[in-house]
Length: 584
Image (cartoon, rainbow, N blue to C red; front, side, top):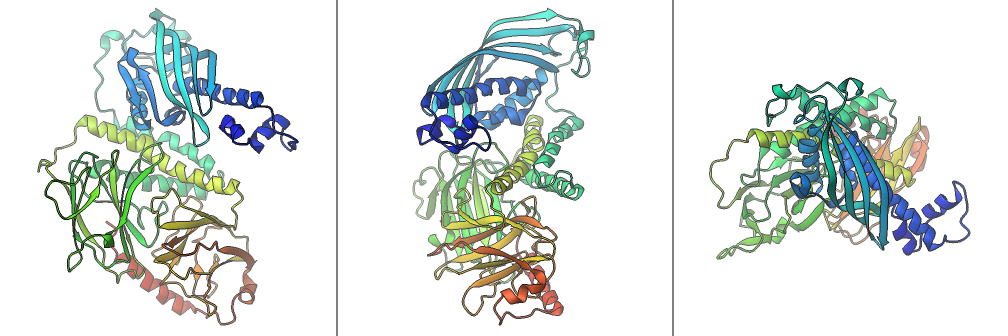
């Protein structure tokens, strides 16, 4: 947990707990040498964890040991300076893991030298690899040598910044294959070997999904069959979304892919539709079309889209379309590039080094009445014909989608929810920027939890000046609760303010008969998210649990009664408005 850094900045209760045991009371800060040894121990676990991940072919655990831009120098085996999570993932999935049916590795003599937030180190390793397709069936590969490391703190955790493999002894040696257990099927005889195909079998690709089942353990109730079914649905949703992201278009021939919406519900804002196009940082991209009349139309460039990599996302240029020189009918003609093209006098925005995508958000207050933007994107100077994907490209994308994206996207948000639970945010809310992808926007988030026969009253003042605000409910898996046919969200136009100017909403499993009902869709607990956009104040709302049958006693006396017939009409208009929006 980055003990050295925390000790240097004032240490923490974590170090005190390690020293005193659970329930102990820290009377004084531990001496610096103790904290340094704790940090060394934390770093020393990384080489051991690496060996374990290699032997168990656990790609997520292995990649997670490296810093976001971590590098592995395997020059001895023809792979110099493999850098970044995705490159490391490809290296091990495509080259290292397939080279052996199984392996047994040992790490010893670990040496660590600390220097503030950074460290260096080395170890000795012995590695036995079995079932190498280049060797006979009764031959194993015996390798000994050293690893050299550079470590650094990243988000308060020690990570491998650089690792270099230096084998000093290597030989193929005979062994009795009959005595080898738990190593899969025996390899084909050397004389029967064929050169490996670029494309694996369909079953091999499907097998890449199997580890995703382990995410059940991260849910609120791993024993719940209903929740497990919802998780499986989420995996299918991720696969569907991922196809658009990996296969629809390329930086050379971009198109707008549907990102988050009422189909891909891993926490979209119900008022937003999102479009995503892949780009290359050295390209010139032209966007043309019309702005429409949606309340907000914004653009964002960035890299490391959530789910597509283990590295944290980076956001670059964010701006509102109203900052552009729009034509009389809202026409847009905008160029993105590293430098303004010679002779171009129209709208231009920089494409930062490292940019991998352009994202468009369309945000509506009045669903179905506000007209969506109509946008096209093209890469200037690209060949007019889009080539057919090669087998190697399809292989790489399938491995990324099935072996990475599908589980990674779910894991990210399950861990986010669990972190909120550990912070005690049950029926409490806190302000956050959620990574800063929309700088003018602040979020208020927390968990809601309903007991049987209970309702929650959400209450807040509304900033006097604001461009937009809303609130929504997510289910137990971070999916936005169904919002086309349920009122699981409200925005500044849909909501009713009370006579005192405050906003009050009721979260309840059954219709409480009030205008601002937030329907959790059967979920007794989940996440609540609200947004203040360009607001002059950032109030933090409150959640109050009350008996459902006494709800009216806790609301203003003039709170209207919504009849079942009125609710049905309200929901009908909502679903029609939602479907009139562009989602594809």
